[in-house]
Length: 348
Image (cartoon, rainbow, N blue to C red):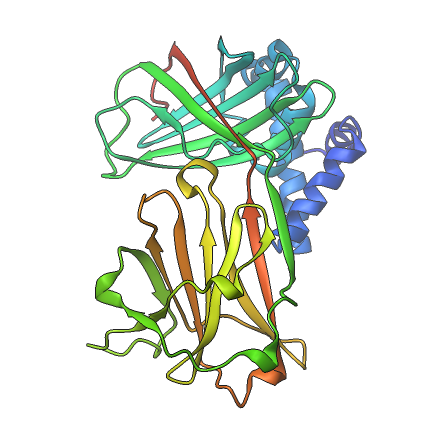
């Protein structure tokens, strides 16, 4: 592409969106050469739109969403250029959802949508669609969602959603239905040292519960940490040790079992608010130590989840470390029935 054309196109994009692309590169550890490539591709994206087609540009213009579209082109130029205008919308509970554009390619659908808070009550920059989006097909699907832009003035959030058929089969048919059933807002993140845990007071635990007595819902362990055939022991809730680092998260016990450090945390209403997090240690040298394994198990109502983090750290070593928590919580779950239908052909 002619360098003058690239320069003119990039000059037309507001500095804050180029800055956002730079921030994106830092967060995702994109190399400088890769970022230059992305910005060049963004210029190419605009040039092709100007020279060959107005379809993708009309998406942003029709929706009054040029700023978000600039960011989309900066981060996902290959997808942005293939979007076809849809501009189908619906409203429920003071929230308007609009499918601004879409692209169907083989077994993958890209859907570019916005959620607009008509009453200014719910949507903020922490909005999370909470995996509640879907295109209605007979195949099992997997998906991903990226918040492209949030306009604090209009309280409009724009997303790029990717949905794939898990069996790899093409998405057939031209009549599509896309829906969203809920979203989360008021999300917060806290990362801090858990000074409520006195390292000198951590002791060997005498009362434990066996794995077979728990309603296990998941777990993880590092290589070499699992012991085949071993039934692990876990902490029981100890009322004397309870503390709340942040609303929705409670540390319920800590201590040593078989000379390994255990820290147990309870996350409230995980199905409603997606409360989650993890525990880690920081040594005197500043290095972080992640748990060698963790196990999650349901509470009696199957609404909240206990998670136990196990470290290969003994009582003799614990004073060499500080205990930290990294937690994510949410205040609002907004439910609704946002559904639109539109016609689009598989571009393959």
